[in-house]
Amino acid sequence: VLDAARAEGLLIGKGGFHRNVLRIAPPLSITETEVADGLAMLERAILAATRAEEAAERPK
Image (cartoon, rainbow, N blue to C red; front, side, top):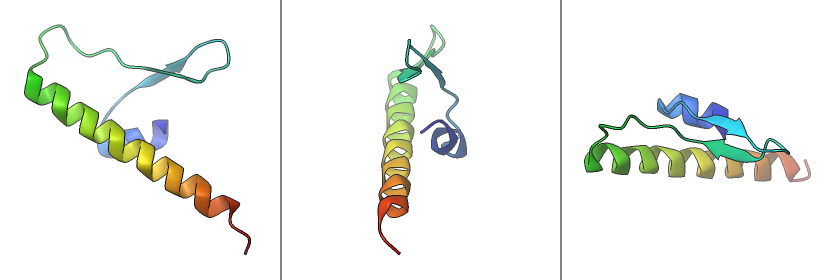
């Protein structure tokens, strides 16, 4: 997900004990439009990562 998000232009980090938490740290002055754009980027990144994982699991 991190690589797919970076490809979208969205920089996020990972955290948590098992490194399974996405860390998002937007600026305090973020607009509603920027929030919506960032969430759309994140959604596309998650979909891309999910599709890539599913493709890798398919028998060849």
